[in-house]
Length: 376
Image 1 (cartoon, rainbow, N blue to C red):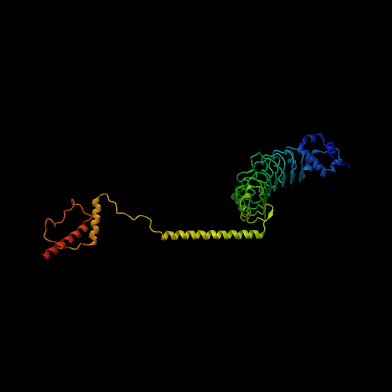
Image 2: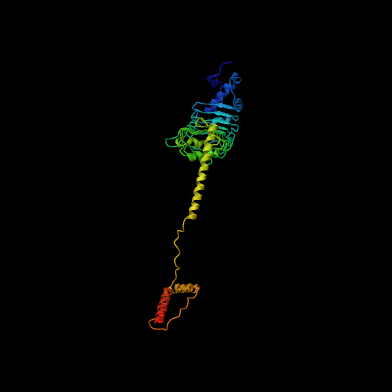
């Protein structure tokens, strides 16, 4: 049995087969022959039907570090479940339409700029895209069984960061368990990743997350999160960041590589409850104090003044009615009329508001005159 080498494989291929095989297909074929072609190598020539039958049974393919730039030839292997194509020059994800059994796809360290070509890969469970040039997380609309998504270390231009398309995780919100977005300059995660209810592991290290509210929204929404790494983000320098993260993520057991002990969580929860109780008591005291002040405070509104009338006669009539309600004034006997003791005439027929005082003065003067007359 001769040793299986590349020269033997090349010599055993027919010319027609050589012309049909593109670059990636050739590497796949070489791997298959190395693993399963010991019986076929005894023959002088490989037929095309034999090659197709052999490739149709392949479930795992590894083509790494071969500088391939396309994925067209992979469509011949319809039974592929695991595909390793990392460390190449691939720019576009393609040729996966006829691979219904694909479960794991490894495309790290290529030149991919966007996530595409996965419309029919509904059974995909693990997707590795680390070390590419992807700027937007999208194209996951049909990955209803996706469990792991790895997109760390994206080679982006200076000042640009990885972003999330609206509702990019809608299809896999209930299945995604592990995500890796480290070294991607992430600035916001709350709006997109808070809907990942089954997420257990999140690597968000060395990003640009700076808002405690945004991180808190993510930690509260991901209700199954157990391990999260936020090291290298500006938010970790905020006051009481660790306490805030532990209280926001009720299920976290490891934060930034450090274990979250049960006693630590209980202690922080007790402090938070006491703080909330004190705040509620202070609010009740303030409300009671405001109520007491409103009851004991004197009437600050100015007393109502006399009613405003359009003319003076209406006001005079009101004053007359008030004096009539008070009752008639006591009648006093008067001396015989004289020019000096006669009542002064009314002022042009108008009501004098000081008339009660004048009447009292007149009565006193009349009484004094009567006493003087009696003495005489």
